[in-house]
Image (cartoon, rainbow over all chains, first blue to last red; front, side, top):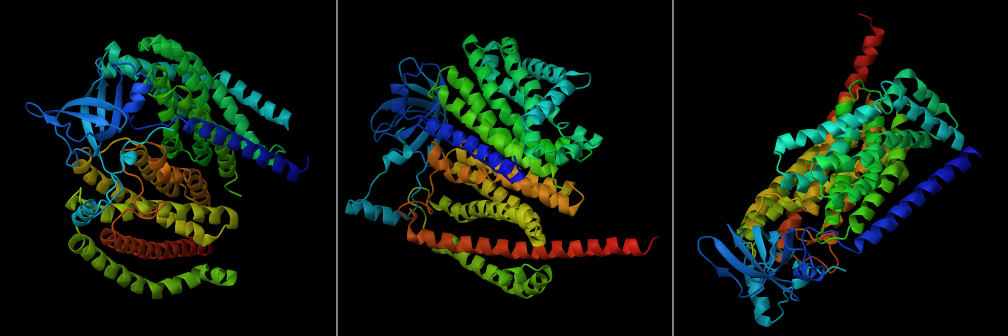
Length: 153
Length: 222
Length: 246
């Protein structure tokens, strides 16, 4: 083989290997690799109680109950499935009903979730309070639940 | 071309098996790190079994790094690197042969030894085969990425530390997917297949990138 | 067009041009910062969810953009070093790396300060935060590599190879929030369907981004000048030591 042919063969095989890598990535991306799991996924995949994981979703409206001291109970939902969560500790500023939240902890046998840390997730929208109020008044407000709790493909 | 490739592979393998080559040192180092951890975190079997995949992966990463700084340095010192650069075999393939030899004498052995060492860390039996599999698929990436650092620092007297600083951040994805694959095999939300495929993809990309970049680095001074 | 670039890229022309340009650039940067700081801290409204804490965005986001932009610039310069072996390409890459590391650190620090009250954590290992942290480490590695190799030509090529290998991280940072469920929110400005930031907050952000960009350009050109002069002195010293043996 001439020098030029050798070079071309080398570049060709390098591209073939990279294409194989891309194919692997695309296959893998069909199941998403995640920081947290939405409640539906936890039920569907029948994750064993006792496993440590992060649950992400919206805090269901009207579900927040404050107990003694700093303990709280609330329900995390992805609008399809609800998961009751109990937690004792300081909640972040952004924690409120209807907001996105990520809780880390242990799944209990009765299908509730005991969190030992709660993080608030905020969406990519930024606007002044007056604008938000005006939008709500005009009925143009869309709370994008899909952003806070994406469904897995 | 194939003959030259195989000859180089054979030479490097023989060098690593003969006295001072260091393949047994890599295994002993791996064993040492694994043995240190129970003393550092306490002998609680539950804790150990939970962090065992992480420990074995970090040990594999460090053991791989250990042998790497001599990958091209020895050849640069005794002049065989200059001969390799003049040979008909493209330098990319020569680098690939040296990477393959290094992997056979480190990554492959580590993958085979991991289940036995897992016993020391009370790794669950169900995780042993998956752990070996992830190491088998993932360690080529460690070798290939490490080769880039080794080639960049081949002509420096004390290149080992700099080389580690350069390549460790690039090894992070391999570590993340390696550990998460082993943990996925133990149950959890993600199927074992997903991180394993990602690990395979990372290895393939790293092999191409490693062969190109280390050859380019070795040609640096002309 | 190419001849104009070739002329600009001549180190001597570059030195003369930048000497005239730098005071104007510095002035413009100061003006943009004055306007940007006023707009973002006094004239812009508080967020409907985050209140006044949202103002951290006006520093955090431009710093984050710059950290990726500077790395991209370094990677392009690296191609210039390896393919065309242009002397200015390496000077640009070498002086951009410390600046890039500074902006990345600023982004990480402000992000941490923002994350504590909003998310409830200084730091989490999600896809976006981890990949930006890796970017910071890659910057540090590049700087170490450039400083360790004595021969400038070899240092340039070594850093260029490393910079191109590390570029793989940039798309990972950009798309990490789309590929994985991260705690970090998705893109607000550069996204399909237009920005999701209200115009009253988008404008201050854009002015601050311009201010940061001009700050970088000013510092970078000044730093490139210094590096070029340093290299000239080095060459002169080498020549002198050869002609006059001690």
